[in-house]
Image (cartoon, rainbow, N blue to C red):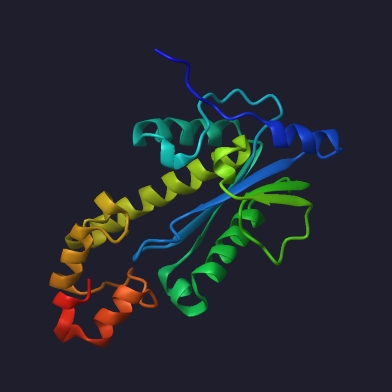
Length: 215
């Protein structure tokens, strides 16, 4: 069996060479779904971190992600998980809601980091030195760790929502616009967790008599 892939700490090492000590990675999950909150996570891993298998959360099985979710939280110097609700997404748009979730995650970091590595997103409120790069969760171990925290935390949240709204199958598609989700919307209409500013839900609310043509 080939050795498990894990990302290296190249960017963290470079930041430490410049004198930074508490280096956080940040990433989000749930910008695209039609329902549920968006989640952002930030995590500071120790310099001697021994977690094996860190990678982009989308490349990991659910079982492996659950194991890493526990390991990251156990070994982290500090971490934060922030949320912005479907109502906030509708009120301020998905980009601003994602930034809000990042802000809430950042506020939980104790001690506060002195450098930040991000998947590609601009955070206007951020005053720390930082780097943001496309597909950061595939090239930075700290960003990958944050990706795993955000993805698994959101999946767990959607599974809890599935108990409140069992007709939609949130535990299977996590709010994304799958065929099964579309069929449930056609049958039951949107619930309180659906993002009414997103085009399919907005169209359904505007023309409920034409639901069968909206997807």
